[in-house]
Length: 391
Image 1: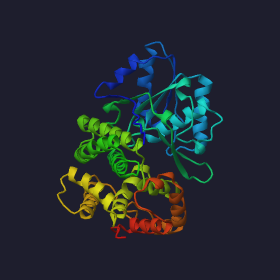
Image 2: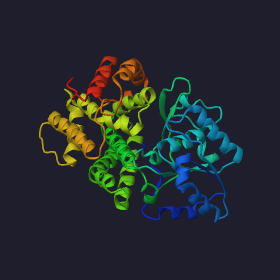
Image 3: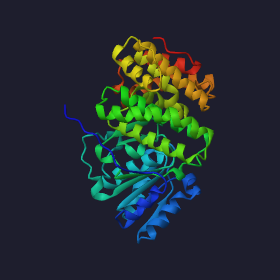
Image 4: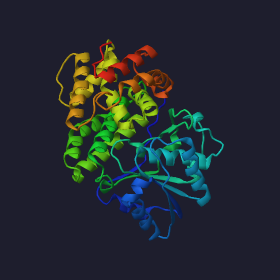
């Protein structure tokens, strides 16, 4: 089978932002949100470009888990300005807004939910895309994927296309040094989930495996250091790199069950994305490894990277899930829905919709073990109580 591995140009390290001085173009629109704008990052980028003769505007309407209507507003701003360059400055939701807006800017006839990996869009004929992450987790700067939310139902849907890959990603550690401790932990666990799922998806491949392995090692080493000292620029830079490597992995192999569960948790209970998928991860490892030798071996291989010496594959996979829970404890990350503060009544009321949305999520098709709605329901119940999956 013919396969491809897509990555953007990566610029990283202190003063990475100076690369903007070499970018060619005339009219740039910066896509961001009001919080990031308050930190002054968009203005810093704007001044750098304007000093080189660019026309630049800032659109700050991005929101967490962007709705289709917000994406349409971003596309209109791109069109009204006639941008030849789109610069996303923010976390995953900002980059999703920029990418999805880019699609509608180039192809206003496109139904985002109908977008497939096989569509020809002509995005780069319309504008180039530069991504500058302000969190170290989503890896969206290195992916060809977007996650958008339906306005009416609130259901998240994920889709991908090779043309959604940014032209360049700039990993500037000073842009993440002010990220608070809880978001540092949530986004770091998001990166780990991307890496692990990229390694265990049914579309895993040698190139995605290589980026996963380094990402897993880096998250276990550098996430605790990032949480312990928020001003540690070396740790921030390493986590930015880890997140981008994990993004390269899953973008070229796909995510699976933890993301199906996490997308649904975000849609129904409005749980922050990194918290949702990171919390789901150890439960899905236990489910996928149960009486499933091939998947168990993959998790066992990842466990060996962090020092697990168990020789039996399924036991090693379960120890890997335990190590992830220990990392979560170490960085102050909730390990169950109850621990995250979700009321039992809210959980029970939303459970049927949680299951339905998870089963509708495209990521579930990449899961390495057959799964039915009854399994999803049971996993969610275990997640609420914090029980280890034993089925």
